[in-house]
Each structure stands twice: as C-alpha cells, then as structure tokens.
Image (cartoon, rainbow over all chains, first blue to last red; front, side):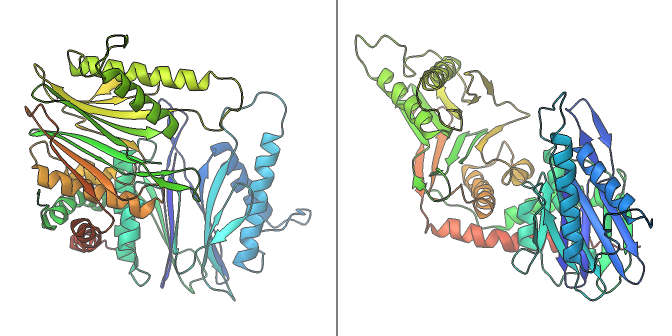
Length: 246
Length: 246
C-alpha cells in the first residue's frame, strides 16, 4: 500500500508521501512516490502515486521522456501545457494509456489490476495553485474549499485528525506537524505504510520547487511527534467529561 | 457496513455496536447487531455481527431456535455448551453452515458473497470471561493480553484512539467514553456507520446480562463527546511542539 496527502493552504501546497512498496509482507522495498518538475519562474508540478509500481513508474517515465526537449517527441509535455488543468489532463491521459497498454497484453496476467491513483498539484504562471486527484480512468477532481486535501492509498487511519485539525490559514510548520500526526497514526496501524517520508512545501506564487525534505527513520522531530501524540491523545481523552452509568 | 467493538477489561467485557445497514447509499435501515443470551447465575453470552444481514439474521435465528428447550431439537445449544470455547465452536459452525447453505443454492446469485464476521464474548460458570472473533470459515481467535479488543466492519478510522487510550484496568465509564470517541471518528468519516448505538457492559463473575443501553441520535453525552472531541484533538495538536523549517 501507500499513504500520500496533498493539501491546499492559503500560503501554498503541501505534499507528503511515504516510500514503502510491498508485494506481500515478505517483499518490502523503499521507492520514491513523489516526483517534481519545475521550469523556474514559470511553473512547479508535484505528482504523488499510489497503486501498481510498474504502472506508476511507467507513467512517470513517460512524463519525463515527453518533458525532454526533442524535435520528434510528438506527444505534448507537462512542462509546456498552458495551465494546471491541461497538465492534469495530460497526466490523466498518460495514466489511462499506460493502464490500457499493460492490461491489454496477452500472456501471463497479474491477480491485481494494473491500477493507480495520483495526486497532482502545482502552479503555472497565469493561474492559481491547484490540486487534483487523478483516477485510473484518466479523469480527475479538483480540491476546493469544502475538500481542501486529498489522500491516496491507506487513507482511513489518518483521516480523522486531518478533518478535525486542518485549517486553510495554517502555517507550513503546522501543516507538517499535522501531516506527521496523520502519517504516524497510519504507520502505527498498517505495516504497508512506512518511513522515510518525502515532503514538498510549495509556496504560492513561487513558480519553482519549494522546500524539499526527506524525513528519515531516525528523524528527531518525527520521533517526538510519534511518542508525544500518544500522550497528547490520552490527555485529551482524560480531559473529556466522564460518562455516568445510570 | 457496520462498526462493532468488543473489549476485554479487568472488570469485565464491554460491547458496542452501531445499527446501520445499507444496500447502497439509497437504502439505509436500522437493524440491531447485538444479541444477548443469558442463563441467570450460570452464563451470559453476547454476539455482535458484521456482514450480509440475511446471513447474520439466519445465524441468530438458528442459535435462538436451538437454544429453545425442545426434545427433538437435535443440534446442541449455546445455552448448554460447557464452556465459552464450546460456545464459540457452536457459533462458528452455525455461521459456516449458513454461509455454505446460502452460497450453495442454484438460481440468482448476489454480487457480494454471503459472508459475515462475528464478535462473541461472555462467561460460563467455571471459566473466565472470554472474547472471540469468529470468521466466515467458522474458525476463531481469542482476545489476549496483547490484543485485548476486537473490531469488525469499518474498523480503521476508530482504531488509532483505541490503540492509544485503552488500558485493561480502565473503568466501565472510561471504556464507554473511549468507545464513543472511536465510534464518533468512524461515523464522522463513513456514511455506512450510524447511530443509534447498542451498549452492553458485562461485569466479570456476574453470570447474567449486565447493563444494557441504547445510545440514541439525540443522546446528550454522545453529542458532548462528539463536539468536545474535536476541540480536545485540536488542543492536543496545538500542545505538540512546533515543527521548524530549515
């Protein structure tokens, strides 16, 4: 499995992804699930992936190949699309194309479908920062005021705290803290999500890759959040008024 | 879907179940998912069900029929089995029998399998209070020190708080509060779990049904927990030290 969250704040976009991939519990690896593109001063694009690794790697490779300047490239590039909406369309079509190609082959078939779900966010000069969730069918939805964040992968454990503590005006610092709590709740409950975590903080109107950080297994702040949150939850729970049995 | 939790405490067993059943989001009903049997002074048995409603109702009806005193009944009864382990075996066999019978029919077939998972708990004189999770195959596992509670149905949203705040020595009052927080996190995130909730508090060495309560939609304590927990979570979150961007 996987856990990735993309979040839209007043001051920009925040992305966090885990790095664990597994084919059964006895075959665990570390793979990056966050991919960044930029054209400095003009656009920044972040993509996070959940699903079949062969599928998502093929999507990223195709996007990369097509982003390279080459006269005979043919296919349009996410570095040239005129808006984030057009970037989302391109990524969606690429995903659909890869899944169709992999599923349409004759020969051995996998038990699980070659499927994937993506979170795409960024800003192209002339537009606002935008955040999308892209489905295996190639279509997508955009984050808006009422649903200002997207999760993909193992989303359930970490959702309650996001719903309760998210505020659009929160600082990047608080957003990272919130995401760490959400990831920690997930990692504690589900073996298929694991450290290290990748983080990208895109500042609105930056038009370039923002701060990028990898949170490693021994990250002191993560460890403090992980142990501190248990205590904080217990105190919050104790502070609630007691139930009275009739 | 469904959400039920059974919990083993030093002072007894605590059971909570929701009552929502649905066949699609446009077909929602209220059905009891908690069933109690007792032979006063000798045994108390609680069963909670998740899965296909036709399956679980058939299981409960069969258990009820077989529990009635009748000379030609034939099948053994959960009111007569000599231990909770034997009760669990009987319930597991009944579940297996019902699923096999429903799945083996010719004619129209449902898209989803006639499956169900059960939580069974109680005490028979001569033994300790015991708690089991019973699988569609009819086999089962028992709660022990390291895993002192079982969840069935929509388990993920409400698990982090259970893992963090459960303590075997907690009072019934605190256990109910904890379960309400866990149910509230689930109900807020998932339409397929809903109020009212059923509650049974079995006191160890009681050998009779303990306190039973239905928490209705307008329950004042539940409403206070539901709104208070959001605030408590936010305060707990704010109390954690801030992240510092490098």
